[in-house]
Length: 330
Image 1 (cartoon, rainbow, N blue to C red):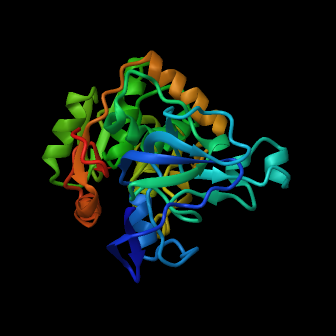
Image 2: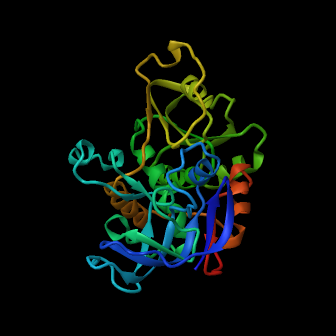
């Protein structure tokens, strides 16, 4: 099969054998795979490497073509989605407490095991999701990380007052729609001078959009920081009201600069998000079926994965980059 492999900080196109299947695995013919900033963190070494010659990608949509010996959940031809969380131990203190996102021996798609930058991928069916019929393959792919992690972060926010979204990329362009359809007022914060992303945010329902160093029209009741810039933490705290929750949604962030305690005082809460649980996915996909969430996929051929990652790195995409290994059109 054709695959894009990370080797020494770069992507190389190569041919690999089909993945071997564990007993609970399904073999999936990949039709779409979203490109996530986490893939960049792995490529750049900001997340410590777990294995050599890795096939990245953890927003996989495809169809089941083969089964492991104990895989019974999805029939042949079933459409499935594969997220970042690829497996847990089920017995550690976090798993026993219902917090499998913090599992001490978790395995992650496109990090511990090969992901979806390929024509085929193997995944443990117990961690896969059935997807709402309203979304075709390329439109469903961003839901599997941008949507899921965005939703987990959104569910942690204080429910009152305007919601601020810092960094208007793949996750924010989904969550702004869910929040607005649930009656929240949303303010979008982008890089200074990024009028294109600000206009994009307004088209998706943001009541105000401006630069991350600007003060919003009113104090925030909550904020989600999707950008990997630690300097946004004191900025979001300064823009927030008493009792606000500030949620850091990325797996990696640059150092948070020193800041005066008064920014946190007033029972403001600062919290990170780590991974996801299968319950998050079940809850989110029910909402995705209930509400109309217009994902905006930007399609790339599999062999253009490096270009897609570079476009994500430099903020050149409105919506989400999606690889189409089968040559499908978005």
